[in-house]
Image 1 (cartoon, one colour):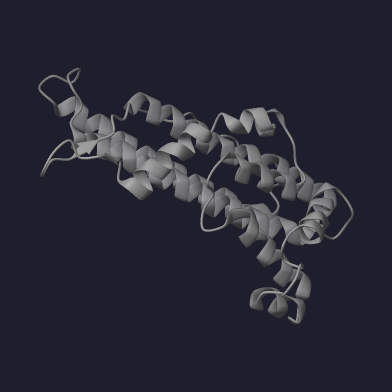
Image 2 (cartoon, rainbow, N blue to C red):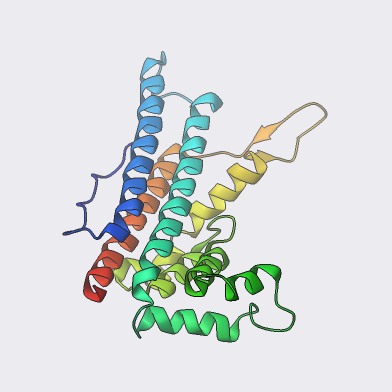
Amino acid sequence: MELSELPRKPRSCPTEVEGSWNRFVATRESVSELFAAFNEQRARQTNPQGPIHEKHKDLARAAIVFTAAGIDACLRTLLRSCLAVLLREDGAAHGAFVKHFQEGERLRGDLTKATKEAIVALDPRAALIDLYVTDLTGSSIQGWKDLRGCRNALGISGNALTDEALKTHQDFFDARHEVVHELDLVEPAGKGTRSRRPRDVREVGRQCDEALLLINDFIAPAAKAVRASG
């Protein structure tokens, strides 16, 4: 199990993007260390080509969790920092922001306490951006539709960010759900027994690698958009 090479940092990386980039690099290092630990333990086996022990597969499961946490941290940081700049002018990002509040639930019916507090805050725009990011990411990024919402909010595009391309990452988020919420356990086969989902470590390696590269697919065009707005 191994990761692709670290992508090049965006040229003249804006301050607003630095935090997300640093989190991306840290996430990649953590996942890479888990992969290295897995490879080392496999190499120590009497038969390195034999069946993979569940304790080794748990390193792969941990890599899924770390990668998902990195996606959450990187995209939340990217949104909060970049939107403060991108929403200063009319454009795709501002259009998505307006549409969210005009067509969403935040300003319909009885306003929530959080919405009321944002409206009367010393800096209402900053407070509304915080609500916006919360609406977009929730407690965590759950699937490709959440990625689409983040893409639209930033007003960015690219071959890796089309709906069809984002859909290819749904298998990673499905795996994340199974590991985080179900510990990869399936229905017990009998009294006192447990069973774990079969987890193909090569597939885990691919999923994590592609998910990490996706973070950069958000960072690079966001950096370009912020530079253009500056």
